[in-house]
Amino acid sequence: MNDLTKVSSKKIMLTYGAILGVVSILLSVISYVMGNVFKPHWSIQLLGFLILIAVIVYGLREFKKQNGGFLKLGQALKIGIGITAISSVLGILYFIIFTNLIEPDYFVQYMDFQREAALEANTSATPEQIEQGLEMSKPFMNTGFFAGIQFIMAVFFGFIVSLVAGLVMKRENPHAI
Image 1 (tube, rainbow, N blue to C red):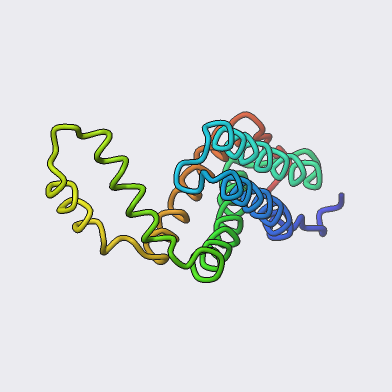
Image 2 (cartoon, helix red, strand yellow):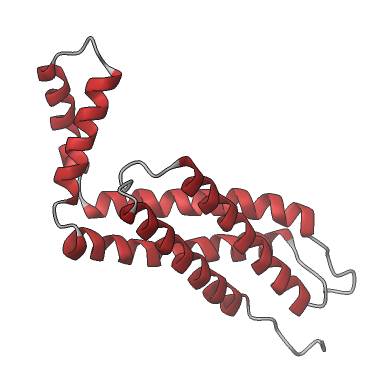
């Protein structure tokens, strides 16, 4: 690679972000089909996290390969966070379609799920106390709130994975200006 050629971190982020987004959506569909939309099986959650790690690491590895074997920690963070941000946006678009078209009663069903879980977990609580708690959470039962939480969590985990992978994979170019 000559000095005039710049590796496009944007292309890496878009490509691997799209891959991660599509795989994450597929895992969500699997959870839905299995009837575990509100509480996915631990194996699906673990698989999703392992895929997140793998996609970020492969994206960083590809960037490093295209960049003559060099990768700065800042580049790793930017790319990893970019991958998860793009993936999260795709997941949010899917969630909007899911809650508006596929399962329009999603939030009603979610509140019912929360009610049952609260009754099981708090055997000493009265049904009125459970209802009062659920009533307080109603303002947060909307697509915008869930989308915001999803985005923040994705970027947070993307940062952590990128930081660790970047520290392991970094290699500064001694001839860089």
